[in-house]
Length: 465
Ligand SMILES: Cc1cc2nc3c(=O)[nH]c(=O)nc-3n(C[C@H](O)[C@H](O)[C@H](O)COP(=O)(O)OP(=O)(O)OC[C@H]3O[C@@H](n4cnc5c(N)ncnc54)[C@H](O)[C@@H]3O)c2cc1C
Picture (tube, rainbow, N blue to C red):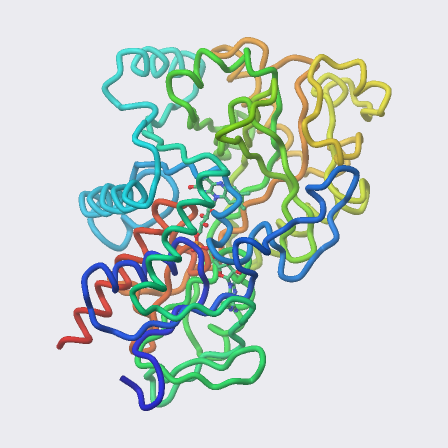
């Protein structure tokens, strides 16, 4: 251990950070572990905008994405059990090993209270049938089994993990941002907190999530760490009556469809489908975007899902996050937050007003959204891709391309610039590891958790060497 310090400091208490610590404890590494989290503890993670009639107050840190449990704490905890979804770990280790790791983290979630039921087992005849229908509609269905925790239960699982870690001697400090990573002669030495406290450690794992991606990019710049540019996914959250998707969601729970737009050949995908769920706001460092939830114990009459258009930029532009933020800011500028538009109004070239919205068949679950015109926000190629995909989806779920369908904008997935990492997720700086969404290697709970396990195993291998 570093004199007076810890063996391992983990920056960020999202799934990646938590699973790093869990693996170190469960494998009886004997290492002294400290987790530093800039957000609040679970009980203090309260979002004022979730109270009725309250808009986003741009809290820093934002309790929706920061605090114990990370961005996952207030998600409805859909563990996607497929190496094809939720990250790029198979670019670091063989896909077979990613599958094994995903199964392993799934068993850990179950140990801490996740329910046994899994939706969408790949050999289900009904799924094969949907796959056939999808092909005819020019869509590709990725069968991905999902374990659904549900928003309330996700928090219970995260609390159980915290209790377990503390019982096993892991020190956890919330409300403690890390400002700097200390490095000497190419070897990590520890961290400096926002309050200026210097904390030495032999190993550091940075797992700051999407919310901490900008910070990590700055750190990487100072430490001369190489970064690759990831794509940026921009789109809308679609809300339809739950009955429209019922024949899909009752079988697959979350249908993951991929479509290539006819006009621009851009990749469009469905993401985060929430049967009987609710559309919610998300604050991305001052920019208000949209997302979706479904709850274990309450239901709305609607289903929502995102349609995201992926765009990778080439030379000389290297700022996909800035581009995504810019588009989302346009919606914020026009609507004071998130905009909502009926598909029929978008196609007819007119804005949605409160009056038109009230005449629609779909009652918006996100009441704070401002009725407006998304064509003033999205680039032509994005809007074209979204409309084309809605038309394709209408062939397998008639009613999706209805004039009453609601589109909320903007939903953006800011995939962080990707750190150059070894197969054990070690950076070019010795003993400094990067894991999870912040390091740009994952974009979902299961793979972020698996990334934490990879980093922990790498550390243990070195610690005993
Ligand atoms: C509303 C919502 C719903 C979602 N639903 C799902 C879902 O159903 N299924 C799914 O697979 N994925 C879902 N996701 C994505 C999923 O939550 C993330 O992929 C996952 O949480 C990433 O884990 P992570 O540990 O890498 O980062 P995060 O969970 O983002 O955690 C990172 C933590 O690091 C902290 N941090 C950042 N910078 C610092 C710093 N400098 N010092 C100290 N701490 C810092 C942050 O406060 C944060 O708590 C959802 C995300 C959101 C926002």
